[in-house]
Length: 187
View 1: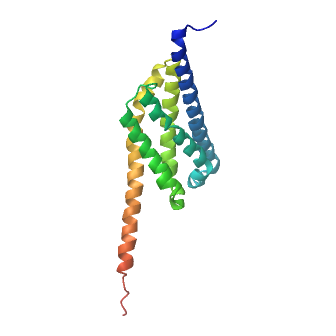
View 2: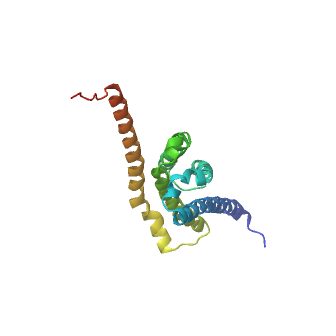
View 3: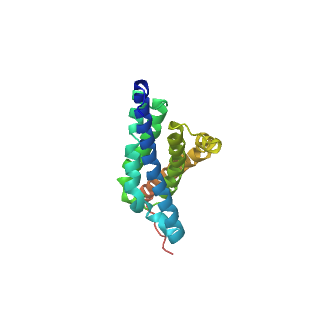
């Protein structure tokens, strides 16, 4: 049975969005599951090499998420462009400029914490969006999608701001104390 001509553009748009959300959901679910299994298998040691274990897939998912700006711009996704641009820009800068480009940062616990928070949010968001496109709605999923960010975003900001502030202050301390070394008094 063929679809009426007026439904084809909407059908194609919904099919494309469903596939996009499904791909993102699978990527973020794989990352989250991998991190969870590694934590239960290796304990705290797994946190140190989180980036090495899942960094490639994380970079891929975040790179693909840039398509969302195009989705909003051309009108196939009903969101506001500027807030989404800010969120994606923040993540891209943190992931590619700060974490990927600096090996000493890749081994920090903050990377694991950020990845857990980001993937938890994205798994819920992409599940909600994927099901919404095909007209399926669950009250708990809707509530989570609209509410989970409230406790997690401040924790993300705290993790980003606290780590980088601490690192900056520590570097500054090292630079200052290196310039003015303490001398031991002879007795």
